[in-house]
Length: 453
Ligand code: GLN
Figure 1 (tube, protein in one colour):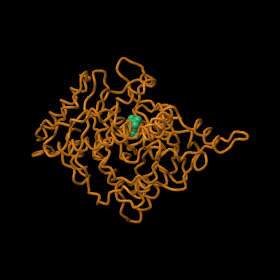
Figure 2 (cartoon, protein in one colour):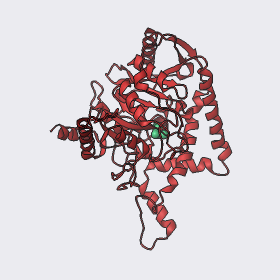
Figure 3 (cartoon, helix red, strand yellow):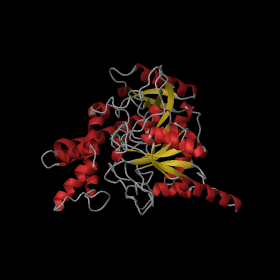
Protein backbone atom coordinates (compact mmCIF):
# COMPACT_ATOMS: atom_id res chain seq x y z
CA UNK A 1 0.00 0.00 0.00
CA UNK A 2 2.76 2.38 0.97
CA UNK A 3 4.56 1.49 -2.22
CA UNK A 4 1.48 2.09 -4.38
CA UNK A 5 0.95 5.46 -2.71
CA UNK A 6 4.51 6.36 -3.49
CA UNK A 7 4.09 5.22 -7.10
CA UNK A 8 1.11 7.56 -7.48
CA UNK A 9 2.96 10.48 -5.94
CA UNK A 10 5.95 9.71 -8.14
CA UNK A 11 3.75 9.60 -11.23
CA UNK A 12 2.34 13.00 -10.32
CA UNK A 13 5.83 14.52 -10.15
CA UNK A 14 7.14 12.57 -13.17
CA UNK A 15 10.31 11.96 -11.15
CA UNK A 16 10.88 8.35 -12.25
CA UNK A 17 11.30 7.05 -15.79
CA UNK A 18 11.03 3.42 -14.66
CA UNK A 19 10.33 1.86 -11.27
CA UNK A 20 12.41 -1.14 -10.15
CA UNK A 21 10.85 -2.25 -6.84
CA UNK A 22 12.20 -5.79 -7.26
CA UNK A 23 15.74 -4.47 -7.20
CA UNK A 24 15.13 -2.70 -3.87
CA UNK A 25 13.34 -5.73 -2.40
CA UNK A 26 16.19 -8.03 -3.43
CA UNK A 27 18.64 -5.74 -1.65
CA UNK A 28 16.45 -5.83 1.46
CA UNK A 29 16.37 -9.65 1.32
CA UNK A 30 20.14 -9.74 1.05
CA UNK A 31 20.44 -7.53 4.12
CA UNK A 32 18.07 -9.82 6.05
CA UNK A 33 20.10 -12.85 5.05
CA UNK A 34 23.39 -11.15 5.98
CA UNK A 35 21.98 -10.11 9.34
CA UNK A 36 20.68 -13.64 10.01
CA UNK A 37 24.12 -15.02 9.18
CA UNK A 38 25.73 -12.52 11.53
CA UNK A 39 27.68 -10.95 8.64
CA UNK A 40 28.80 -7.34 8.71
CA UNK A 41 26.41 -4.94 6.95
CA UNK A 42 27.51 -2.32 4.44
CA UNK A 43 27.08 1.42 5.08
CA UNK A 44 24.05 1.57 2.74
CA UNK A 45 22.49 -1.71 3.90
CA UNK A 46 18.86 -1.90 2.81
CA UNK A 47 18.60 1.76 1.79
CA UNK A 48 16.29 2.10 -1.24
CA UNK A 49 17.70 4.81 -3.47
CA UNK A 50 16.82 6.41 -6.79
CA UNK A 51 19.35 6.30 -9.65
CA UNK A 52 19.61 9.20 -12.07
CA UNK A 53 18.91 7.62 -15.45
CA UNK A 54 22.39 8.56 -16.65
CA UNK A 55 24.02 5.61 -14.84
CA UNK A 56 24.18 2.37 -16.80
CA UNK A 57 22.32 -0.31 -14.86
CA UNK A 58 22.71 -3.92 -15.91
CA UNK A 59 19.45 -5.22 -17.40
CA UNK A 60 17.53 -2.01 -16.64
CA UNK A 61 16.73 0.54 -19.35
CA UNK A 62 19.13 3.50 -19.33
CA UNK A 63 17.95 6.43 -21.45
CA UNK A 64 19.72 9.67 -20.39
CA UNK A 65 16.10 10.92 -20.78
CA UNK A 66 16.53 10.79 -24.56
CA UNK A 67 14.61 9.25 -27.45
CA UNK A 68 18.03 8.20 -28.79
CA UNK A 69 18.53 5.73 -25.93
CA UNK A 70 14.89 4.84 -25.33
CA UNK A 71 14.77 1.08 -24.85
CA UNK A 72 18.56 0.75 -24.45
CA UNK A 73 19.28 -1.93 -21.84
CA UNK A 74 22.96 -1.98 -20.86
CA UNK A 75 24.62 -5.36 -20.39
CA UNK A 76 26.84 -3.85 -17.67
CA UNK A 77 26.68 -1.84 -14.47
CA UNK A 78 28.30 1.57 -13.85
CA UNK A 79 31.08 1.52 -11.27
CA UNK A 80 29.25 3.95 -8.97
CA UNK A 81 25.98 2.00 -8.98
CA UNK A 82 27.87 -1.28 -8.46
CA UNK A 83 29.63 0.24 -5.45
CA UNK A 84 26.28 1.29 -4.01
CA UNK A 85 24.84 -2.21 -4.43
CA UNK A 86 28.01 -3.66 -2.86
CA UNK A 87 27.43 -1.31 0.10
CA UNK A 88 23.93 -2.81 0.51
CA UNK A 89 21.71 -0.26 -1.27
CA UNK A 90 18.85 -1.21 -3.59
CA UNK A 91 17.25 0.68 -6.46
CA UNK A 92 13.67 1.97 -6.45
CA UNK A 93 13.92 3.17 -10.04
CA UNK A 94 15.63 5.29 -12.65
CA UNK A 95 15.11 9.01 -12.22
CA UNK A 96 14.16 11.58 -14.82
CA UNK A 97 16.68 14.25 -15.86
CA UNK A 98 17.39 16.78 -18.54
CA UNK A 99 18.22 15.02 -21.80
CA UNK A 100 21.88 13.91 -21.71
CA UNK A 101 22.10 16.04 -18.52
CA UNK A 102 21.86 19.27 -20.54
CA UNK A 103 19.61 21.77 -18.82
CA UNK A 104 18.67 23.44 -15.57
CA UNK A 105 14.92 22.78 -15.35
CA UNK A 106 14.35 19.19 -16.51
CA UNK A 107 12.38 20.51 -19.44
CA UNK A 108 14.74 19.02 -22.02
CA UNK A 109 13.79 15.47 -20.96
CA UNK A 110 12.20 13.39 -23.72
CA UNK A 111 9.91 12.01 -20.99
CA UNK A 112 8.54 15.41 -19.98
CA UNK A 113 9.55 17.79 -17.20
CA UNK A 114 9.71 16.86 -13.54
CA UNK A 115 7.45 18.87 -11.23
CA UNK A 116 8.73 20.14 -7.92
CA UNK A 117 6.73 19.10 -4.86
CA UNK A 118 7.08 22.75 -3.71
CA UNK A 119 4.66 25.61 -4.44
CA UNK A 120 5.16 29.30 -3.71
CA UNK A 121 2.66 30.68 -1.22
CA UNK A 122 -0.30 32.27 -2.98
CA UNK A 123 0.53 30.71 -6.34
CA UNK A 124 -0.55 27.56 -8.06
CA UNK A 125 2.22 27.65 -10.66
CA UNK A 126 4.07 24.37 -11.13
CA UNK A 127 7.71 24.92 -10.29
CA UNK A 128 10.82 23.28 -11.67
CA UNK A 129 12.77 20.90 -9.46
CA UNK A 130 15.91 22.08 -11.25
CA UNK A 131 18.22 20.29 -13.59
CA UNK A 132 19.73 18.27 -14.76
CA UNK A 133 19.26 16.00 -11.72
CA UNK A 134 15.64 17.18 -11.29
CA UNK A 135 14.14 13.72 -10.87
CA UNK A 136 16.63 13.09 -8.06
CA UNK A 137 15.87 16.36 -6.26
CA UNK A 138 12.09 15.99 -6.63
CA UNK A 139 12.13 12.38 -5.42
CA UNK A 140 14.21 13.21 -2.35
CA UNK A 141 12.28 16.42 -1.60
CA UNK A 142 8.94 14.59 -1.88
CA UNK A 143 10.30 11.83 0.41
CA UNK A 144 9.85 9.20 -2.32
CA UNK A 145 13.35 7.96 -1.52
CA UNK A 146 15.81 8.91 1.22
CA UNK A 147 18.63 9.51 -1.25
CA UNK A 148 19.44 9.51 -4.92
CA UNK A 149 22.44 9.70 -7.17
CA UNK A 150 23.10 12.81 -9.22
CA UNK A 151 25.74 13.97 -11.64
CA UNK A 152 27.16 17.46 -11.84
CA UNK A 153 28.87 18.86 -14.93
CA UNK A 154 28.10 22.52 -14.31
CA UNK A 155 25.82 22.49 -11.29
CA UNK A 156 23.41 19.63 -11.89
CA UNK A 157 23.63 18.31 -8.32
CA UNK A 158 23.87 21.66 -6.54
CA UNK A 159 21.21 23.70 -8.38
CA UNK A 160 18.38 21.11 -8.09
CA UNK A 161 19.27 20.58 -4.41
CA UNK A 162 19.27 24.32 -3.69
CA UNK A 163 15.81 24.94 -5.12
CA UNK A 164 14.16 21.87 -3.57
CA UNK A 165 15.55 22.14 -0.04
CA UNK A 166 17.74 19.05 -0.39
CA UNK A 167 21.45 18.46 0.21
CA UNK A 168 23.99 17.34 -2.37
CA UNK A 169 27.71 17.25 -2.96
CA UNK A 170 29.79 17.16 -6.11
CA UNK A 171 33.12 15.73 -5.00
CA UNK A 172 36.54 16.60 -6.41
CA UNK A 173 36.80 15.70 -10.10
CA UNK A 174 38.01 12.10 -10.22
CA UNK A 175 36.68 10.96 -6.83
CA UNK A 176 33.81 8.98 -8.36
CA UNK A 177 34.42 6.83 -11.41
CA UNK A 178 32.74 8.01 -14.61
CA UNK A 179 32.76 4.46 -16.00
CA UNK A 180 29.24 3.55 -17.07
CA UNK A 181 27.86 7.08 -16.76
CA UNK A 182 26.52 8.43 -20.06
CA UNK A 183 29.15 11.05 -20.95
CA UNK A 184 28.23 14.71 -21.39
CA UNK A 185 31.48 16.71 -20.90
CA UNK A 186 34.11 14.27 -19.71
CA UNK A 187 36.51 16.79 -18.14
CA UNK A 188 33.68 18.13 -15.95
CA UNK A 189 31.29 15.23 -15.26
CA UNK A 190 31.21 14.01 -11.63
CA UNK A 191 28.76 11.83 -9.74
CA UNK A 192 27.61 12.58 -6.21
CA UNK A 193 24.87 11.93 -3.66
CA UNK A 194 21.66 13.93 -3.14
CA UNK A 195 19.81 13.39 0.11
CA UNK A 196 18.18 14.97 3.13
CA UNK A 197 21.21 15.69 5.30
CA UNK A 198 24.92 16.33 5.26
CA UNK A 199 25.53 13.11 7.19
CA UNK A 200 23.58 11.02 4.67
CA UNK A 201 25.59 12.63 1.87
CA UNK A 202 28.84 11.82 3.68
CA UNK A 203 27.84 8.16 4.13
CA UNK A 204 26.64 7.76 0.54
CA UNK A 205 29.63 9.55 -0.99
CA UNK A 206 31.88 7.20 0.96
CA UNK A 207 30.15 4.29 -0.77
CA UNK A 208 30.29 5.88 -4.25
CA UNK A 209 33.89 7.16 -4.32
CA UNK A 210 37.16 5.34 -4.94
CA UNK A 211 39.81 4.58 -7.54
CA UNK A 212 38.68 2.78 -10.67
CA UNK A 213 41.23 1.60 -13.26
CA UNK A 214 38.42 1.68 -15.85
CA UNK A 215 38.32 5.51 -15.73
CA UNK A 216 41.61 7.10 -16.78
CA UNK A 217 40.79 10.28 -14.83
CA UNK A 218 39.91 8.43 -11.62
CA UNK A 219 41.84 9.66 -8.58
CA UNK A 220 44.11 7.02 -7.10
CA UNK A 221 43.62 8.12 -3.50
CA UNK A 222 42.14 6.46 -0.43
CA UNK A 223 38.54 7.32 0.48
CA UNK A 224 38.51 8.90 3.95
CA UNK A 225 35.81 8.11 6.51
CA UNK A 226 34.00 11.40 5.88
CA UNK A 227 30.90 10.48 7.89
CA UNK A 228 32.92 9.31 10.88
CA UNK A 229 34.97 12.51 10.96
CA UNK A 230 32.08 15.02 10.59
CA UNK A 231 32.60 18.02 12.85
CA UNK A 232 30.59 21.24 12.83
CA UNK A 233 33.02 23.08 15.11
CA UNK A 234 34.79 25.58 12.85
CA UNK A 235 37.06 27.18 15.46
CA UNK A 236 40.30 28.30 13.81
CA UNK A 237 38.81 27.96 10.29
CA UNK A 238 38.58 30.76 7.78
CA UNK A 239 35.64 30.99 5.42
CA UNK A 240 36.13 33.08 2.29
CA UNK A 241 33.40 35.26 0.82
CA UNK A 242 34.19 35.83 -2.86
CA UNK A 243 33.39 39.45 -3.61
CA UNK A 244 32.82 38.83 -7.33
CA UNK A 245 29.84 36.58 -6.53
CA UNK A 246 28.01 39.69 -5.38
CA UNK A 247 26.55 40.75 -8.68
CA UNK A 248 24.59 43.80 -9.77
CA UNK A 249 20.85 43.41 -9.51
CA UNK A 250 21.16 40.31 -7.36
CA UNK A 251 17.98 38.97 -5.75
CA UNK A 252 17.66 40.51 -2.24
CA UNK A 253 16.53 37.23 -0.75
CA UNK A 254 19.61 35.45 -2.08
CA UNK A 255 21.79 38.13 -0.49
CA UNK A 256 19.93 37.81 2.82
CA UNK A 257 20.39 34.05 2.78
CA UNK A 258 24.13 34.46 2.12
CA UNK A 259 24.32 36.91 5.03
CA UNK A 260 22.54 34.45 7.32
CA UNK A 261 25.04 31.78 6.28
CA UNK A 262 27.98 33.98 7.23
CA UNK A 263 26.47 34.54 10.67
CA UNK A 264 25.85 30.82 11.26
CA UNK A 265 29.44 30.05 10.36
CA UNK A 266 30.69 32.80 12.66
CA UNK A 267 28.58 31.27 15.44
CA UNK A 268 30.25 27.93 14.66
CA UNK A 269 33.62 29.54 15.42
CA UNK A 270 34.82 30.44 11.91
CA UNK A 271 36.44 33.68 10.88
CA UNK A 272 34.83 35.24 7.81
CA UNK A 273 37.30 36.71 5.33
CA UNK A 274 36.91 38.56 2.07
CA UNK A 275 38.47 36.78 -0.95
CA UNK A 276 38.67 37.60 -4.63
CA UNK A 277 37.98 35.35 -7.62
CA UNK A 278 38.60 37.94 -10.34
CA UNK A 279 37.79 35.78 -13.38
CA UNK A 280 34.35 34.72 -12.14
CA UNK A 281 32.48 36.59 -14.86
CA UNK A 282 34.31 34.68 -17.60
CA UNK A 283 33.55 31.26 -16.12
CA UNK A 284 30.02 30.91 -17.49
CA UNK A 285 30.90 31.78 -21.11
CA UNK A 286 33.96 29.51 -20.91
CA UNK A 287 31.79 26.67 -19.58
CA UNK A 288 29.33 27.08 -22.45
CA UNK A 289 32.22 26.58 -24.88
CA UNK A 290 34.07 23.74 -23.14
CA UNK A 291 30.98 21.68 -22.21
CA UNK A 292 29.37 21.77 -25.70
CA UNK A 293 32.77 21.08 -27.33
CA UNK A 294 33.18 17.90 -25.30
CA UNK A 295 29.50 17.01 -25.76
CA UNK A 296 29.77 17.25 -29.56
CA UNK A 297 32.59 14.74 -29.42
CA UNK A 298 30.98 12.41 -26.88
CA UNK A 299 27.62 12.34 -28.64
CA UNK A 300 29.17 11.33 -31.98
CA UNK A 301 28.78 7.72 -30.82
CA UNK A 302 24.99 7.93 -31.25
CA UNK A 303 24.99 7.21 -34.95
CA UNK A 304 22.17 4.70 -35.33
CA UNK A 305 24.63 1.83 -35.50
CA UNK A 306 25.95 1.19 -32.01
CA UNK A 307 23.30 2.18 -29.47
CA UNK A 308 19.59 2.73 -29.20
CA UNK A 309 17.57 4.31 -31.96
CA UNK A 310 18.04 3.56 -35.68
CA UNK A 311 15.97 5.35 -38.32
CA UNK A 312 16.49 3.67 -41.65
CA UNK A 313 14.28 5.29 -44.26
CA UNK A 314 13.31 3.18 -47.30
CA UNK A 315 16.27 2.98 -49.70
CA UNK A 316 18.49 5.06 -47.41
CA UNK A 317 22.27 4.96 -47.41
CA UNK A 318 24.58 5.24 -44.41
CA UNK A 319 24.67 9.05 -44.32
CA UNK A 320 20.88 9.20 -44.59
CA UNK A 321 20.59 6.81 -41.67
CA UNK A 322 22.94 8.93 -39.53
CA UNK A 323 21.02 12.07 -40.37
CA UNK A 324 17.57 10.57 -39.84
CA UNK A 325 18.56 8.90 -36.56
CA UNK A 326 20.17 11.99 -35.11
CA UNK A 327 17.43 14.36 -36.27
CA UNK A 328 14.85 12.17 -34.61
CA UNK A 329 16.83 10.95 -31.59
CA UNK A 330 18.19 14.21 -30.17
CA UNK A 331 16.12 17.01 -28.64
CA UNK A 332 16.53 20.70 -29.50
CA UNK A 333 18.86 21.55 -26.60
CA UNK A 334 21.13 18.59 -27.37
CA UNK A 335 21.28 19.64 -31.04
CA UNK A 336 22.06 23.22 -29.99
CA UNK A 337 25.01 22.01 -27.90
CA UNK A 338 26.32 19.74 -30.67
CA UNK A 339 26.19 22.60 -33.16
CA UNK A 340 27.90 25.04 -30.75
CA UNK A 341 30.48 22.38 -29.93
CA UNK A 342 31.35 21.54 -33.54
CA UNK A 343 31.53 25.27 -34.33
CA UNK A 344 33.97 26.14 -31.51
CA UNK A 345 36.13 23.13 -32.41
CA UNK A 346 36.16 23.83 -36.15
CA UNK A 347 39.52 24.70 -37.73
CA UNK A 348 38.71 28.36 -38.36
CA UNK A 349 37.36 29.13 -34.89
CA UNK A 350 39.24 26.76 -32.58
CA UNK A 351 41.74 29.34 -31.33
CA UNK A 352 39.21 32.13 -30.97
CA UNK A 353 36.82 30.03 -28.88
CA UNK A 354 38.10 26.71 -27.57
CA UNK A 355 41.71 27.71 -26.86
CA UNK A 356 40.52 30.94 -25.30
CA UNK A 357 38.01 29.10 -23.10
CA UNK A 358 40.73 26.71 -21.95
CA UNK A 359 42.89 29.68 -20.95
CA UNK A 360 39.98 31.11 -18.97
CA UNK A 361 39.55 27.74 -17.32
CA UNK A 362 43.17 27.87 -16.11
CA UNK A 363 42.67 31.42 -14.80
CA UNK A 364 39.56 30.33 -12.88
CA UNK A 365 41.55 27.45 -11.36
CA UNK A 366 44.36 29.84 -10.37
CA UNK A 367 41.84 32.23 -8.79
CA UNK A 368 40.68 29.46 -6.47
CA UNK A 369 44.22 28.36 -5.74
CA UNK A 370 45.12 31.88 -4.61
CA UNK A 371 41.91 32.31 -2.61
CA UNK A 372 42.55 29.05 -0.77
CA UNK A 373 45.86 30.45 0.46
CA UNK A 374 43.68 32.74 2.57
CA UNK A 375 40.77 30.51 3.60
CA UNK A 376 39.77 26.90 4.26
CA UNK A 377 36.49 26.94 2.31
CA UNK A 378 34.36 29.37 0.33
CA UNK A 379 30.73 30.28 1.00
CA UNK A 380 28.50 31.51 -1.85
CA UNK A 381 24.91 31.25 -3.03
CA UNK A 382 24.14 28.14 -5.08
CA UNK A 383 21.65 29.77 -7.45
CA UNK A 384 20.76 33.35 -8.44
CA UNK A 385 17.00 32.75 -7.82
CA UNK A 386 14.63 30.34 -6.07
CA UNK A 387 12.73 27.72 -8.13
CA UNK A 388 11.06 29.25 -11.19
CA UNK A 389 7.82 28.11 -12.85
CA UNK A 390 8.04 25.55 -15.65
CA UNK A 391 7.95 27.13 -19.12
CA UNK A 392 9.06 30.50 -17.79
CA UNK A 393 12.61 30.25 -19.16
CA UNK A 394 12.22 27.40 -21.59
CA UNK A 395 12.20 29.57 -24.69
CA UNK A 396 15.25 31.59 -23.64
CA UNK A 397 18.37 29.42 -23.52
CA UNK A 398 20.63 32.26 -22.38
CA UNK A 399 18.41 33.06 -19.38
CA UNK A 400 18.45 29.35 -18.56
CA UNK A 401 22.26 29.21 -18.82
CA UNK A 402 22.52 32.16 -16.39
CA UNK A 403 21.11 29.90 -13.70
CA UNK A 404 24.50 28.17 -13.58
CA UNK A 405 26.48 31.35 -12.90
CA UNK A 406 27.50 30.46 -9.32
CA UNK A 407 27.89 26.75 -9.99
CA UNK A 408 30.22 26.51 -12.99
CA UNK A 409 33.41 28.08 -11.54
CA UNK A 410 33.90 25.14 -9.13
CA UNK A 411 33.15 22.75 -12.00
CA UNK A 412 35.79 24.29 -14.27
CA UNK A 413 38.27 24.07 -11.39
CA UNK A 414 37.30 20.46 -10.50
CA UNK A 415 36.69 21.41 -6.86
CA UNK A 416 34.41 19.73 -4.32
CA UNK A 417 31.26 21.81 -3.86
CA UNK A 418 28.04 21.23 -1.98
CA UNK A 419 24.62 22.82 -1.66
CA UNK A 420 22.94 22.85 1.75
CA UNK A 421 19.41 24.13 2.51
CA UNK A 422 19.68 27.55 4.14
CA UNK A 423 16.62 29.82 4.33
CA UNK A 424 13.11 30.14 2.93
CA UNK A 425 11.97 33.05 0.78
CA UNK A 426 9.03 35.25 1.84
CA UNK A 427 6.86 32.96 -0.31
CA UNK A 428 8.18 29.88 1.47
CA UNK A 429 10.53 28.54 -1.19
CA UNK A 430 13.86 26.99 -0.21
CA UNK A 431 17.22 28.60 -0.94
CA UNK A 432 20.54 26.79 -0.75
CA UNK A 433 24.03 27.89 0.14
CA UNK A 434 27.08 26.60 -1.65
CA UNK A 435 30.30 25.53 0.06
CA UNK A 436 33.36 25.16 -2.18
CA UNK A 437 36.49 23.43 -0.92
CA UNK A 438 40.12 22.77 -1.79
CA UNK A 439 40.88 19.82 -4.07
CA UNK A 440 40.34 16.51 -2.19
CA UNK A 441 39.03 18.36 0.87
CA UNK A 442 35.47 17.04 0.88
CA UNK A 443 35.77 16.80 4.67
CA UNK A 444 36.02 20.57 5.07
CA UNK A 445 33.11 21.08 2.69
CA UNK A 446 30.93 18.61 4.59
CA UNK A 447 31.93 20.11 7.96
CA UNK A 448 30.97 23.63 6.86
CA UNK A 449 27.76 22.17 5.41
CA UNK A 450 27.00 20.59 8.79
CA UNK A 451 27.50 23.94 10.52
CA UNK A 452 24.95 25.49 8.13
CA UNK A 453 22.48 22.64 8.51
N1 GLN B 1 22.77 23.40 -16.41
C1 GLN B 1 24.08 23.08 -16.88
C2 GLN B 1 24.04 22.70 -18.33
O1 GLN B 1 22.99 22.73 -18.88
C3 GLN B 1 24.70 22.00 -16.06
C4 GLN B 1 24.29 20.64 -16.45
C5 GLN B 1 24.97 19.59 -15.63
O2 GLN B 1 25.65 19.88 -14.65
N2 GLN B 1 24.82 18.36 -16.10
O3 GLN B 1 25.03 22.39 -18.93
